[in-house]
Length: 288
Image (cartoon, rainbow, N blue to C red):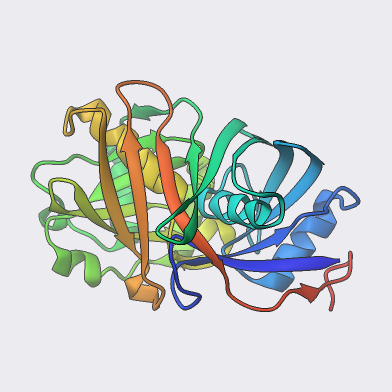
């Protein structure tokens, strides 16, 4: 079985967030997909099934759990398919709904844009918010004075935690085990987006990912989209508008995520993806 390895939200193999991709996963059940994702060891791997012209079904697995939606693996999958079938539109059926993906060549690089399902934003219970800050090892003084802590959904439910300074962001040292327990209790299956607003339309982000068995994600497309929905809900941006998220430098894989927020509806996330190693084979049981 052919395993592809791509880095998303980067133009170089040394950057971005790595994703495994299996383009012919129809013969795999969930247990085998989970074993293969654990063997690959990336934050997520995408398993593509029921391929047809302009359409496919996909499931996403982190090393320790299935994830309903994954932005960076969707971008990587879109680019990998475009390299084989040509750029264009691709409708992906995922556990959270249909995701519209368009691939195109810009400045010599293949890029993919995805449109999320309908997002929503909600508040946090006070006790849960306090526990979240404790597990992130943040205090009230570390938080932004302008942007509140909220939950935002754009395919996955992400706590959005804006911090006051880039120094606070760079110094983030979360309690992974405690955060994992809290997130399991709350049903948060993806990342926590800790963000700093560098400029009005430029953000830096770090994303702990305990539910997937990953300490920190290098680029989180679904969290970037959730941030866009959050900013729209708060009236902090004037849609239609784009902004960028810089992530991954703290784990040695710099990434840039482009986000476009319309007046209503799903948020668009765009990025490049490049192959990071030669393809390899893994058996259906997950072993080489």
